[in-house]
Image 1: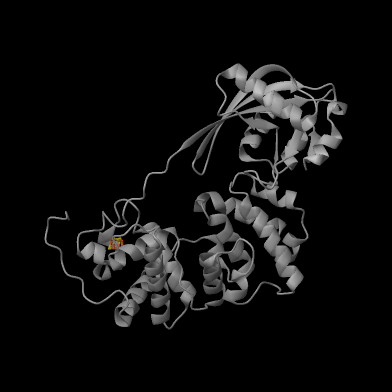
Image 2 (image 1 turned 90 degrees about the vertical axis):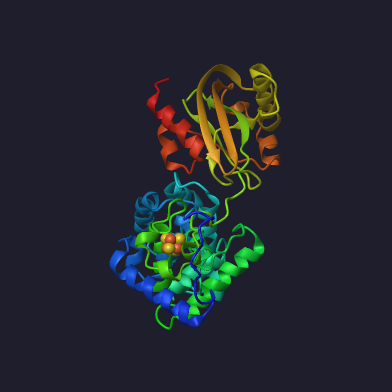
Length: 384
Ligand code: SF4
């Protein structure tokens, strides 16, 4: 329906308990017939739900499933996760991206074990105090695992709620978020039965029916309660997001091999992107003019940290990588030093650098940044 056509008038306010109850009933009924069978829906164990929620942030369901299963095989409970080395967590996380999630997961496991809240904190407020757990994740765990009456707002439900209540403002605005959270809490309060099932039903309708483009209103169980549909606004709600400005970055990386055929790696520092992960030494050259000036800059930066300049032989590989609003082009050069002894250890320590030399086959065992993983895969296929 176009905006020029006369819309139907929806009945009831977005917080009318009778209407909310009717929406909840329709959602749960639909969910009982149409829900997808996902591994984290087969459990009420809070630890498992927490792992799935953490992995699902910014990542597609189909990508997450094998990671989730492998992770739980290695770390079946919070104690085993807390007892592990962070490097091993990174290793199981490699490929999912957004490594801060893995770091916070590990930190939260340590906190749960230290506080003795085993097998997992049992209420929403205690869960919300853990590192890396925001309002959505805390409410999702409390609701899915314990049926506590907590509303949820994430990508799928915020679009669904905005359409149900006919909210035309951009979703990122604070007053809009407040309105959506109010709706989320109100619908859960209006439904006297299991909040976990209701929230999952609403998420599933958001994901499988009320899609961002071309929502399937004709088969939607909430059609008769939806203001956007009834007023012909489902194609214009939610308001379009402002376009993300992409910043192009250029980096030069050195693949430095010692006489024993080992590669030089450094652990990325806490102030850097992909903090805690291992990487090849690489330097931002976005501001440099031309190839030789970029290479000269990268060699100088390397020398400042390690006390010697790499002897570069050839450019061997380019890796393109996108992260948040950045598009990074990493150009890699094969290089060598005079041996591991050429590194100035005092200078390295003074700069809080952690380095190691690794054989090619050992690279599989390290938590590498995604772009470093691409370089490592390339090294494995090469013969030097
Ligand atoms: S009727 Fe259409 S716009 Fe409204 S909730 Fe259902 S799919 Fe979304």
